[in-house]
Length: 182
Image 1 (cartoon, rainbow, N blue to C red):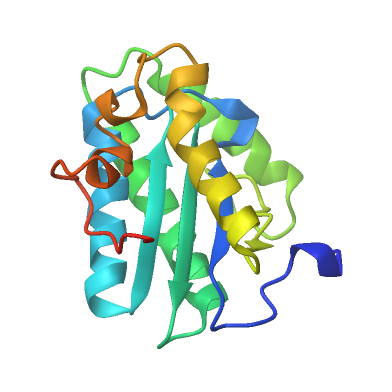
Image 2 (cartoon, rainbow, N blue to C red):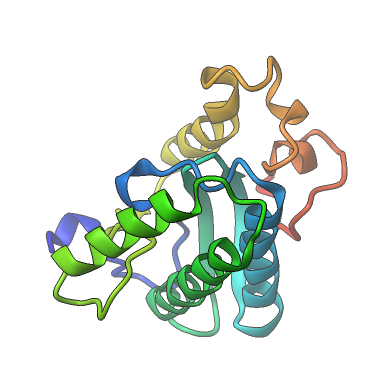
């Protein structure tokens, strides 16, 4: 892995993105988004994850995060491992999921291609953490996260997208406990 995409300073904030293998649109369904939200809330309360911004899109997630307790890369590793297991199980156990066989086939295909996995792979391997070491970079990534659903055509205003911290930055309740950047 390139040094460019490593978490070097645990005390800094990082922009990270997690994408589903083959860009499968998993998070179009509420029950799968809820798995992510529950896990992120657990990580903030139990592992010391500090979430400053987030956006859950249909096939990927953007975060601005930090940690003053556990090493950030460990929290992110555990988060991805846990959510991949829980999301695969949620898909398998969902009798309403019309795309179940197709999604599981793609995840199994990705898992077989990757020597780090035993069977299935939910998330793409990389997080591409970018250290947010300047105010300009921090604001740029915050804007990028909040504009993502607008650019995708889901909403016309960032704060109208329920699965984003843009609601909190607009003074509205958020689905996830976050720390505001002021």
